[in-house]
Length: 265
Image 1: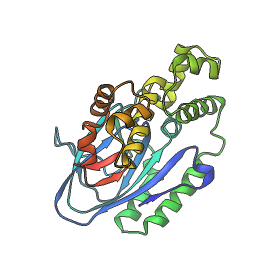
Image 2: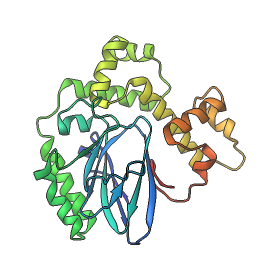
Image 3: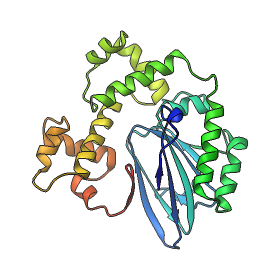
């Protein structure tokens, strides 16, 4: 279940996702980059890293991903994922987004007192819509007097990249902002966690994904890759593997796509 935030929160929160698993089986899942950061809230999730076997925190923030992360879950769980606009994590935890890129940050370490009530509601199987409504109130109160000129600049650059489906050059951004490439890159990485170029590549890949998910039967992969701005199919496949860990055909054959960047393997 995917739910949009109220209009005044849309510049900071892309959407909420509620997921639950009532079975006992182990599930292997992959979270891959879409340029966003986010928050996973749960009262009972049993999530582990497949490489170390390390247990993940019940609730955690994740920084913008440069690639993908795999997890496996055991048994029943319910969770609310809050998918942020990338710069919102920087505002919430007051840390450079570049420093937390690819990182998992336990709610126990930041904002524990504020977020613990939401964990308890999920543990008690509260209506997820009521939990999300309470989160809307929490984020609205948090945002009071938090804006400054930097956030407005970064949000404007992000929208410029989105409007061009990721196909923008450093010269385009210099003309748009009036800042040098290096100066803008430093600001962007501090607030977004990624460079403008990396973020643009991710947006272009997700535009290709949107075309792929609604492709007509007569459109081949090469045609879709050109439509998304790739010079040839080999560049697309390389970007796909680096960011998602699959080929386009493997992605198409993945049955359980729980969200645009969250799939069951």
